[in-house]
Image (cartoon, rainbow, N blue to C red):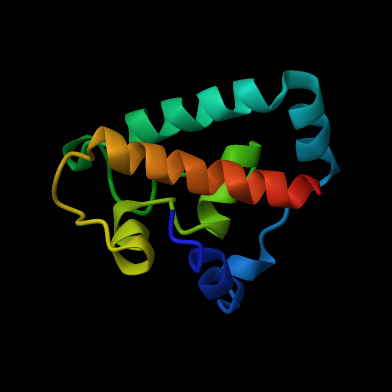
Length: 115
């Protein structure tokens, strides 16, 4: 994981405005981080892995789940953002390593928000 990515994201006026709210903290408390991580894996695999299965920029809602909020905060919400911020080529099916990287970034952001 690019340890500097959080420093870079913190300089973005758009990215740094995302934070979990009470509703999301309660959801995390109720479900647990393992379930939240399984949701992140599911969302990445369904909405980001294969670029032919979605309309880029419209696949990730901006609210109603901690992972969605984290995806926008970490620029892992669409293939354009993955390309710009994480240097992940937008036109190929994501490798398992790339998917794991994305999930790890999302989960680290969520854990940072919980602190």
